[in-house]
Length: 285
Image (cartoon, rainbow, N blue to C red):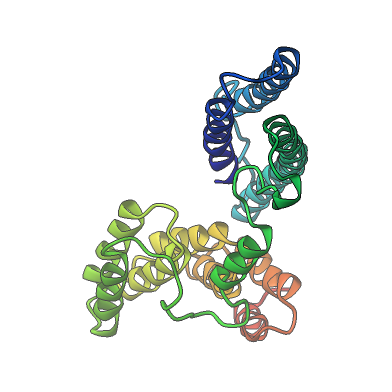
């Protein structure tokens, strides 16, 4: 993450500046001033590092009278965490800007003290080495397409063996080996937590469990897929399959609420019309 790279590179930058100070033929008071500014900058970085320390155990209230209530509770917590992340991101950017300006000022003064050519000084590199434009480009390239439920594996950053394991599970599904596929997909998400394929793996595991007639576990897999990314390309299908599974479990009220939510969240999507048909089949009001 950016904040860890920032901390590591700041220490390296400050060490580099410290060892580059000349040992002789310098003005003592001016060098003392520079050392004092470096100390102040280091204190600010240490304060930032302390913010990385946790202050207690994580807590969450995921209780609710229905599956949809619990999903909404999870979404609320995710939104709160996103807001905190954005606040920290803004503050870190401010610290990076201020630190970069200070480093640039120190470089200027050191060159001036050493009698060097000030005009030869280039632009001070960003503290932490963060290139915002490049970072945004990488993020855009890694973001999955929102218009299709299935996306190719090309372009995804996958761990060693991750692609092969996922494709092996896909092949088992294609061959109709549902038990093998379900087992492989469950193992996949245990082996590669946080994988960009995690939502697809949960959705496919739900289909495999449905193929085995295990509707209850299939519903749980569809819920995991939807909770994993409630706005992603697989979200409409996962929410529809969850509602349909609840209907097969004879939980009609919850099924009708969930299926109705497909049209509310994803109006115009093909699964919205499919959900409407399923609602009619279940006799939803």
